[in-house]
Length: 266
Image 1: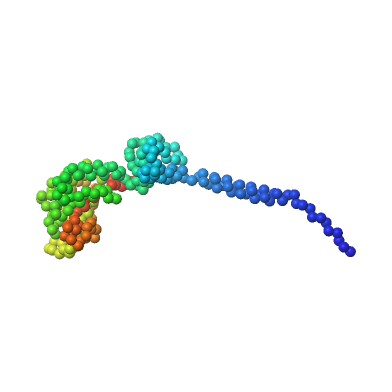
Image 2: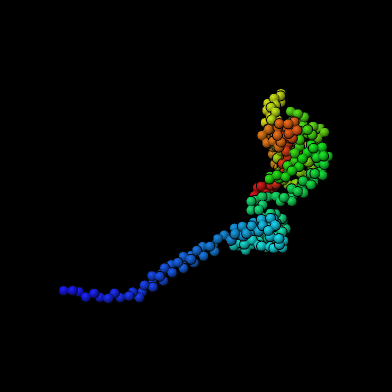
């Protein structure tokens, strides 16, 4: 006996499956939007400030009057909100500084080092002209190079009496500054062995500490602002193949550090 086949009925509720998928995707979309809105707005503001500063310094953004306030999640007093102007960061108290310097924790504005270099250039003009002293800026701050030819006898850590006037002028200028100072002794690669020093390590370190002793005893420099280092022949500024190059390497570098004691302790 044959059975009759019943016609299949169309499922009119199939649309609920697509609707459920759509609701799920929409829910996920709004969750993503909500999560994105919770990003640290202060960090985003710092990033935007650094990017604009970089573009302005490269000359891509020519407008010098654009000012973009930092974005913060908490209300801050107006004097504490950094701004961007002319590619430089400006805080409400009027202090200048690069946005990159602030982001990296760089403590001293380049402008301070420039002013200090001008003061020292005037104070040490005779020694600079005689190529006994050289000034240059570095990543750490301002470097005052005292070459052996003008300040020390060969193989000796005792400062020449004729150079004390120049050292006194350096101390007077640096005394008025808040920056820490590091004395670095350097030699050439010619081995030394005399009654006083057995190696270039000892000679370079002795010259650096002799400068510190002079600054403290003669010029009443605060000892906590001073430090010494001896590098022997391992940080040359010229080749040791020629007498001229070796003469440049025999030196004491007075490094005026960009970080001041107050800033360094933060």
